[in-house]
Length: 277
Ligand code: G1P
Image (cartoon, rainbow, N blue to C red; front, side):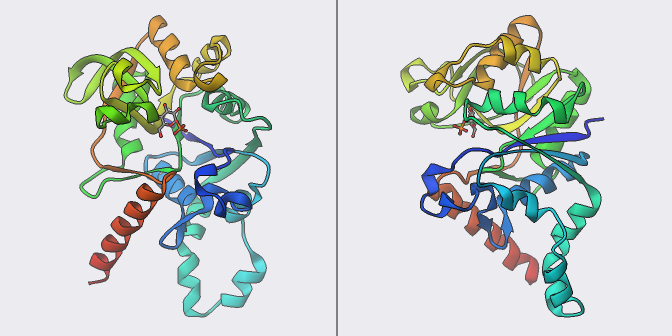
């Protein structure tokens, strides 16, 4: 059973300035729910109940969001507004939230390593909350990945086909397909130029990691942009054992970009309207 999910959330969100000047990017709303809550709900629906959030300076709203607001709740008690807080209260009842800080922005691999004291010696999920995933036809993306993990007991990364000219935005894998949509990773490159990309299979912000990844991260040297990349650590891991890449079912919105954010808003708005009918 995978019980814990890590949320690296210390980044600055510079693509969304000025709103991210004093507001964590993970608190930007799609309709009325912040991105981080979509991620936490996905992890909870995938069976995880300990949420380990890696925060940084100026990110206190993330902690407050998952705590009781007595004054506010007293104000709205017994009114129709109470219902608006229900999803947040539900998730707070189901889950335990733990937090630590990443004091320096040294890369995603570094952020994940900072989570080790919260995770300990067990497999765990990782969600990058600005990759908002939605599967209207069935299980959510992390739940699909847990099933792959249960069968193979190794690290699993989510992948999606992207246009070749966009590989420079992603970690990109190469591998051998061993069953429908499941690949054994043979190569992994962080943000390659399209000409150097080993394929058009891009890593999306969902991972299942085994705790030995922490030692591999420590052995990994800084890569792209001088940052400690989880992509490089997973490549090193793949040399020692098996790493799988899973082409998930569902949609993914890049809510770290204005285009993706607006598309996500439109998608969830249309869904809400359909459900209201
Ligand atoms: C991170 C990872 C990258 C992955 C991407 C998915 O990059 O480093 O491998 O493809 O998330 O969103 P970031 O977008 O944080 O620069």
